[in-house]
Length: 258
Image 1 (cartoon, rainbow, N blue to C red):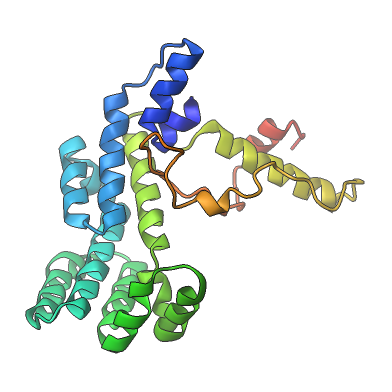
Image 2 (image 1 turned 90 degrees about the vertical axis):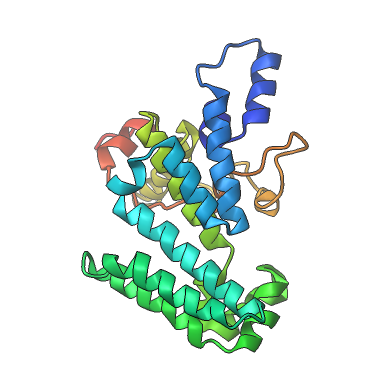
């Protein structure tokens, strides 16, 4: 239940609560608000997403500059994408104007903001053929390789995974603003298990070459709907970041003395 609520599966959470005959503590309307924001980001409609975030919490983006910048940069990428897919020549100018008005003020605040803005603006010099052939084909299989060839170091900016990454950041920020955990407990436990295995191997503990988490085959459903209940995925289920600085916290989960 914790995972379904935190990750944004309202229909599945309701069904689980009904079948388990339990009363969920969370208000499902709040989950649906996060899902609507996520869906807007997945569609590339960043303006709608920002408006929904401001309706939910008017101070969130003002207080979290990095999150706001990530949303605005993704919006710029989508505007540039539209300018190359449309015969309207004025869209390029609109993308540049958007960058000057909304993103340029962030550049003096932090060096990384300037770097990220420059990389996004570099998309304007990518040949039109690269946009129409590579990006329109989708992110999987041969087309992913084609995108990499066409965009080089900028490929990550036009890959749909960037939308998922930003949606994940937004989901976690909203949860934190509502005094909830940023992630479901199961994610911490999976990382703790991975950390404990790594520690055991470093200490030469006798372990099998491969210890399965029982999650094999889950990647194929990453971008699909959650069963047939109408919930789409709120955050990435793929590669978790194993670089955990909170050693004591990991030791507590894994019952390993620090």
